[in-house]
Length: 192
Image (cartoon, rainbow, N blue to C red; front, side, top):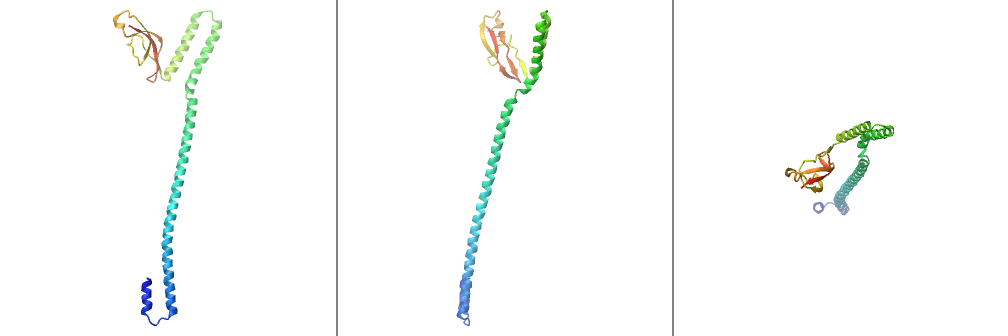
């Protein structure tokens, strides 16, 4: 552009030096304006990138804070769940505890043993029913082949017949399942 204007200046003989100086000043101002605009574009691109970086950092910090809050909330909920996980079972067993207290009071005045035995049997059945509702099942071991995954052998005794060899002869402690998982192994005596 400057070259064009200078060419025009030299081509026109009737221009005086003042006009030529004005034209040169205008050309210089235009060049400065173009340089300023180019610098402004670079600065605006830089500002734009800085703004995007600030937004990304803000987004990251918010996400990190949200995750940290989630982690804390989860830890708190797990701790609360651990504290109250047996509550349902304990509440279900409270009537059995009440029955045992009534049985003890009635045993103090009891003359005959038969009603006391019957009361204890009723309490035991009530307890078994409550535990069965919660998923507890008794393991049947007597007469079954010995299985190390289910039974804990205490001792071996000579089997009275050959068909009882390797089978459970007696049970010292019952084994139990909780929803098809062994929670206590049966302590058994195995025929040898």
